[in-house]
Image 1 (cartoon, helix red, strand yellow):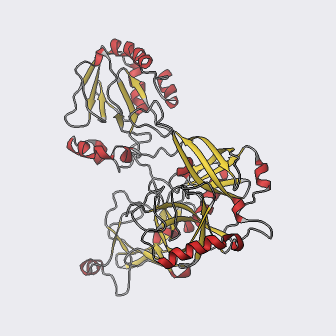
Image 2 (cartoon, one colour):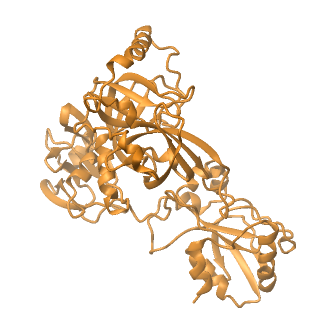
Image 3 (spheres, helix red, strand yellow):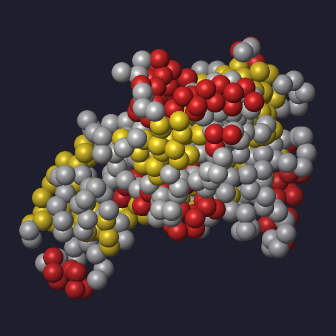
Length: 509
């Protein structure tokens, strides 16, 4: 099921009449029945509109930023004079402004913390006097119940005034967010549209979650980031850095097949998940281990556990709750007996391809060539080129989910067409090949490439590629080094390399 941010659901089309009437009636009586933060405080004063001007990366021109995009969303005032919103509302923002309810003022803001994976961000205002009249919303301490009524506040497209829609909690599950992040997620049926992102949903006068996405082809299916995930994010950033919640990285399969159960000697009534591949699993697991429980929670044959309010969720929900010193207690059926083991967990894995987060890509320009590391973001950026990568047997395909072999390892990509210059006459390596070697030296990172080329004294520079069928490029070293400055000037490129490569260029040894 594909989930998109900035959805464009039509709130009324093909919706049963009783639901339409319910929404209209709610809006009509909203002024009389709005819940309050305190005795005299309207919760609308805690909801704001957010404007941002973003410049995302340009994967084919990593020395510059992409085209300007104007984005609007919603946010909510929280404790310690902060505003909470979605990461995708302010990611790569050059400017951020906050507009209070019933006001034309746009107050300058800055990003304090951002976590694109869980889609949360914190803003602060230059003028904190705003918070004297706009108090923090109250958070619920518990998960809502399925079927519980809620109200979604925000500023969707179609008007300037605050929108308030009502609905119910349809489902609560532990599922994927973005960039491999997992967490609890609340499904709602309240109509939401572009601009609602980052707005709060209230139940019983308290925030139960933050709107973050919807499904464009489904009617009135939206999603909230629940308060439990928000609190974990806020706790995480207290030291100024976001790490992410601990996760368990091990491939598992279900235990439903009778032959599999017989082979493993599984007793009647026992359930769990089977470890069949330990190549990238934590070393404490052994092949054919059956994971039967996490803490005191029994795991069923689909990997689910029961938690509060009779909810069934993926057992991995318990990992960050039970983690202590980066260890989680897990019970396995091993050699026909139950064994409790302490399993290492971590927020991140040392993957070959890493996400940029809210950063811009590193790059290095050498003559007509532009190099950049391959990031996990390239999986989205270059998705349309997958047939080409497959045809060329590119490492982009078969190495994209590998772990690091050594610290700092990267694949290095030719990120754009060759700059026009006479020394490139007759060359056409095609789009996005992976660099294999320079003058016979295997390339393991962009930094290593920069140091190698800076120290090179050979007469010729020879670039060879890991992709099948990509032509080898040979240049005279003196010519390509002289051409670099000319190419930078002709194309308006201010720097030959990104700031993180200055030391590699100035101190190549």
